[in-house]
Amino acid sequence: MRCTLPHALTAALALSACAPQRSPSFLVVSMDTFRADRLGSLDARGLSRTPRLDALAARSSVYRRAYAQANETLLSHGSLFMGKVPSHVAPLRYDAFTFASDAPTLAARLARAGYRTEAVVSGGHLNPDFGLWVGFQRYATTCDFCGFQQSVDEAVLRLETLAAQERPFLLFVHGYDNHAPYVRPSLLGRLETPGYDGPWLQLGLENLSYERVYDGLYFPDFQPPEDVPAPGGKVSSPDTYGALRRYAQAHPERGQPLTDEDLAFLRGSYDAAASLVDFHVGRLLDSAEELGLGDELVVVVLSDHGEGLLDHGFFNHRATLHDENARVVLVVHRPGQPAERVDEPVALLDVAPTLLALAGLEQRGLEGRDLGLGADPDRVVLSESVLGHRSARNAEHTLILRDTTYLGIEPPAALPEQAWLGDASGRSAAWDRDAVGPLWAGVRELWL
Amino acid sequence: MRPASFLLALALCLSAWALFMVLSPPPLLHPEATLGLLARLDLDGDGRLDRSELSGYASPGISAGGYDLDADGFVDAYELEVFLLAVDPVPLGYLAFTNPADPR
Image 1 (cartoon, helix red, strand yellow):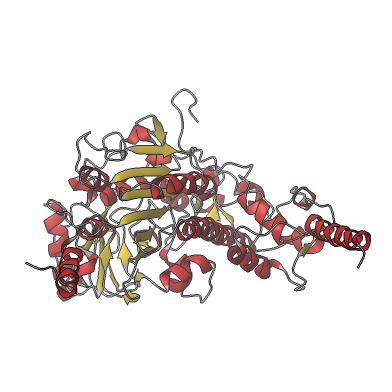
Image 2 (cartoon, rainbow over the protein chains, first blue to last red):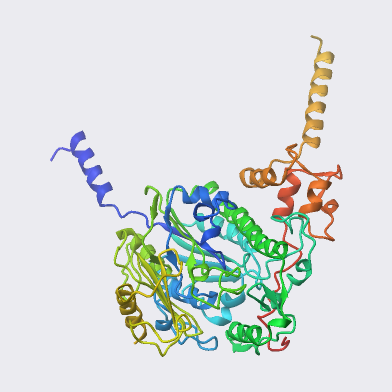
């Protein structure tokens, strides 16, 4: 047969259509303790402290009601990496929550498919001792409880190496900038409240000080319960917040009120950390652009949980599953995909199936949903905590169960001690059995 | 033009260029982010932070002088970026995460 030009063109087109597409690479950035409402594009106060992240969000899918499956680092990342609710990963105890060495984590699944998998983390509950490294071929801890200032330096170097390779990659980068203590002396130590000269300049340097504030009162004599055992060390007891509340209720006269200036300084220090996160994550995004990865790199920016800034009494995230702790940042940038704003509830455990789907891989055994499939209006998103709290959220309501003995849709005897119902924005709502029913079904599926 | 005059003019041009390069701050590595933050802090809008502006932002005991690398009395965009990129000398020091050998 003579090979004419049209024949050759047709053959070339057919070949290019059949040629396997290069799998996308993934950059996943986890901003520890970063409240969703501190991302400029989600900030109800109309403030933008995160211009670089907002620019990314403007050309990405922004999930406005994304929820973590736990309110702390260890369980939330365990769920993120495994694509399952925490109690389906391991027992919800600090000395037992870990991965088996052959766990089918997101990183392990990608590595088996030929991906290079690396992580640059900032210690704490992501220290290798806790075992969440499974599947990463390189898992670097830059230091213990530090921020993106350090981890981004290392991540930029890794990105340069990974970009030079033929293989697609997963690079996971993490920093604790927004974690307590929020107050850190520096050139910009009073960024949001210039001139503040109150006692929290000193008190705010100690993590313990935050565990002594309840409902706007500082209890200097409160002694938290003993730390509890954990791999490689100890962590503060999850009962700290219950003990603090009991102490505050028993000894209200011992509480020293925080002034409006004190509160503005502490919350401002938290916001300042968000500004610095934006700067450093922006450096990482710059680096990806400079390396020419823009067209093939899927970027996921998320937070593992939020932080209570006295929204429900505490300066912490482990005390409750309310929105300030459970609602998180989730921005997914897929090159070539139009930007969108998604208002239906989604879960952090959706990240694993979404990335696996983009890589063309199976999602068997995962409990999340590929975000590329679009919104599911009937979705119920579940979260858990080491304190035994459970929550369920759908498009209209939020149900938080604080008492493991409560098992019905009728109003529990001790509202709101046992159960709390809120609207989609996390505001308290009157008990409504028609609203609770579908949410309870989700919790029961998880729990029983 | 005679060769000597040409060489003199060339030498003058090169000297002026060298002086300009020495006196100009290095280019910013992350101009968008650094200038954005600077704009938030720069109350008088002169494109740099003077001691009075910095005294409110800096923690007590933190001397802006250490960040004023050319000791001209101001922290400019380049010096602000150097601060942002330098590893913070104060670790976050989360006290609740303790080593068994050194319990709280």
